Length: 215
Length: 217
Length: 61
Image (cartoon, rainbow over all chains, first blue to last red; front, side, top):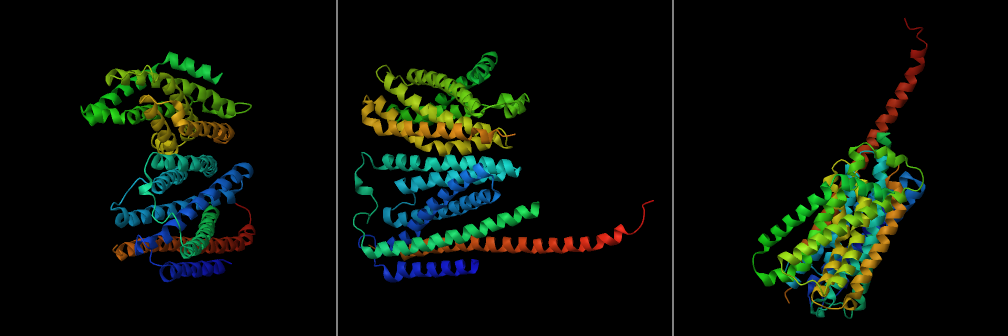
């Protein structure tokens, strides 16, 4: 089963690369630097997915006290932080040639940075509580608070960066996106989602084995 | 009832209030030194500084929400209390709200004094913004304080957890305060106020619903 | 506009390295735990086999 998933993931990633470099065209305004988007956008999508899973798993844990749900939440948060980090890094690397600066407080980078720190705190909390049951409970509560905070972060940052500001700094290419680019984004997003599921299941398994070892 | 207990404890040992007042004063000095005598630059950053002062004081004050129970071995009393533990949350929240609003009022006056601001006209608007923002701070702060009280590195973990969560609240309150201080109407920042109100509802609801899980024996 | 392939390479390279490292961490940890699990199983079987011998040894002084 896992081999199948792993194989599919690999195939998906290869397909994604092919789309990103072979099929997708050289973008009109930005040049080939725009291809970083095929990394950056799927990463942020996966991050949101991961944190959504954290929310669901957290609620399930509090309601049913299923250890598996707790492990799922833990694993998903970790993978989510991983992809959030990749989002930030790729966004920054894309920003340097495009905007001339390594860092800018644009809506997406700011939002993602806040999410990064929030869920890093989640992992920190888990790391600091020795008692397994208490750690699971607290992490679940934090997972719920953090998830409900995501839309608040999204809107507050969006308004902060775009209201009363000329849209000249808006992401280039956000106007009309050629279909080819959309397809490339879709393929890469699907591939990244598979990768997320692959990492998630493996990480959750490691957590289960660790729990069994400690028992 | 929990509110009364906390208020009584506060009155008997006024440490928290006094310490926070002194802390606020120190912050003002530090802001002044850090930003220099340039009045215009100061004026521009005023809303941000004000809320920075509020949040930093909040970190200290809120972080201590359960210190009395912890230090005096009353923790089991909390854990074993019959009935809905959410009542404890609401009580603590109300106590924290009161504490924070008092500190914020004092800080506001100090700000007005030191930076020579005329706050009279802006006061009603400010009151609304500060009230909305403080509920958001206190709601999450009380919940997280209960959690971190039971953890080892609580002084470190509490700010680390609270600050990222409060980032949108900070954005909203600073923008709204900015507008109010410039003499604009609350209507012009309605979207920020709605965001704050939404945050308040979400945070208090989550707090009430999850507090039981935080205080389990 | 210059193409800045170095940036593209940096981004993809960084992502690839990070993901590969995480994958390696997972694989290694899993192998470690799986092996430990097998060892525990064997130990448990070994001790349960020696139990009957000890029980039939006679009374303790």
